[in-house]
Amino acid sequence: MTRIGNSDLDVFPLSLGGNVFGWTADRDASFAVLDTFVDGGGDFIDTADAYSAWVPGNSGGESETIIGEWLASRKPEGVVVATKVSQHPEFKGLAASNIRKAAEASLGRLGVDTIDLYYAHFDDETVPLEETVGAFGQLVADGLVRNVAVSNYSADRIREWVEIARRTGVALPVAVQPHYNLVHRNDVEETIIPVAEEFGLGLVPYYSLASGFLTGKYRSADTEGQTSPRASGAAKYATEAGLRIIDTLEQIGDAHGASIAATSLAWLRAQPTVAAPIASARTVEQVPDLLAGARLELTTDEVDALDRVSEWTPAKA
Image (cartoon, rainbow, N blue to C red; front, side, top):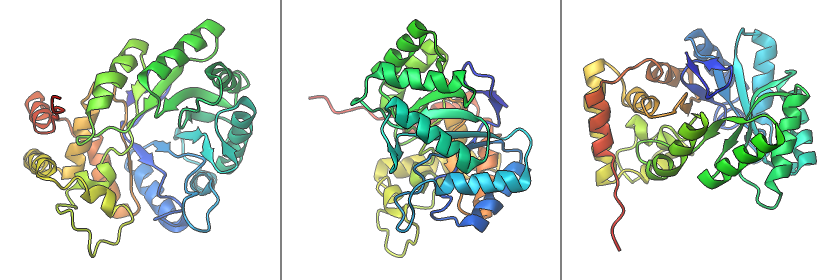
């Protein structure tokens, strides 16, 4: 188990991504994935009110609705659910009144009294940050939210959020959710991790497997014949440098009897302030690798080898 920042949330060190629920995984498939994850020891689920509004025929909230129906059906003990606000078609942005309405809608879809971890999904600079911070603080004060967090925020805006929360005496953020993986490192390591260390925030990275590239499934930029909606996003990493990372992951994983995906997640867990990477599964067959990635412990030498092969230095002007 791992603690998320300075919160009271002790969770399995991998979060099951709910972005596929109601998209590439229908209700029955989603229930099966959730069952397999929890049966395997998982207890941390990540979703957002906007999932999956981008799918034709969907309007947003489908993932939360499926998770809520699963929670009502299974009544699992100790499951932690994180969701987010700012991108739902009906609840765009981070004005105080919108945050309140969106949170109440999420609570209704999830069928819970309190949201365990509530993220500001994307920064909204059209609204004064004081208003947003105050609205999140009021949700905690009123018992609708246990912990607040930020996603896709810059280091400067995270620092500003913390300063406002301290000055006004409202709940401090406990987590930050950035895009972070072996093929997308620099910005997070140079700017976000130092802020997380300074304020005791836990990182809950998304795109942990780079849209599937870090499973080793995509070893060519040619996506012809690939049926996954995420294939093109993964295949763009199939460069000479990207494939060297896959080869190193495979070599290290083989030494542990672990998959490329599990080894990639283990590397991410070994990084400073990382609490629980997010990874999704649209079938039950994909879940064991995620569970294994939460338990695999790499040696210092193995982490160093992956650091070296994935290092990227920008060209000097």
